[in-house]
Length: 398
Image 1 (cartoon, rainbow, N blue to C red):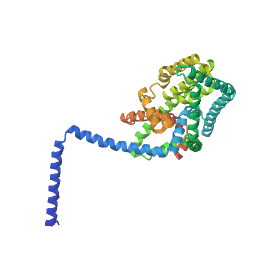
Image 2: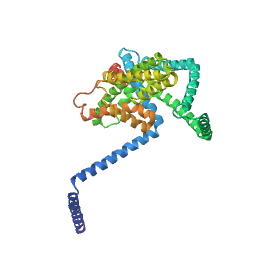
Image 3: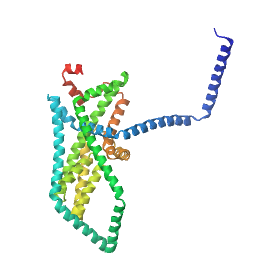
Image 4: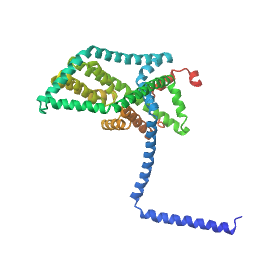
């Protein structure tokens, strides 16, 4: 039974709650509704921003693991159409993995061999032309609008040499840092190859295990959204590979026909740079024009600029819309901003992975907002087609 003290205590707390509600109501009535809504949105935004900041901080701390993982996922997306074709045609999985890896290594080795061959073949003439270009630039400084004297140029060169000597310690530490970076690159390359093999061998099993980490009611949404995003990444990677190849052939062939030295290395740089939309094409195209200006003169540089602009216009107005279609709906302005933001946060890797990650997030957000897993619009992905080729006994056992 409750005593008098308990009853009085309960009455006191009840009165206190009522008074608190009255005061809260009076105060909420005094605060404008717009300000209350703004405050509610503000603290939620701050909470989300804090969570995103912690996530970015963790990614930066684990960059030696995250970058190889992202590279392996992107290479898997590049190899997936060829790998899926072999699986659909009843190739053993291990044979498909070996052929995919050997094909990738053959392409990389072929590009490296072509670049090395042309550099070794044209290096003597490039050296001679470099000396001639330096002499021409020196004559321009003397006879051009600057009207510098030989003594002033020599003084500037001497000051530059003195500065390099003073910064010798900094350069040495930078060389050590480069050595450490090369070690990280080699380690990351081996890790990326291992992750690539794992994804090709048992990517479906890894994903099923990942889906089980989510609550049961959310698994269908997570599975469908991720598959839709994966299809988008595959389409993006396939399109960028084809576009990069066409860009490299067009600009490299144009450089070769115009007599610009090192045309094959230029084409390879264009191929690699094309995987960073807009920014990579601009930088590699400017490099090609600069080499044409230095080694072949202003008229050849002008024609090289025409070739670069023509290829980039073909890419932007014909190839990208035709090949990409509606698979990756990311506005060009969003692409530029995403690439710039990725470069600011994570440098070259951030610029490389920014667009496919943005496309993935965009498709996942649309899929979840439309609740497509409830309407029966769950996409039939290439992964599903591969999984149906696995014998039922293996599927059950997995």
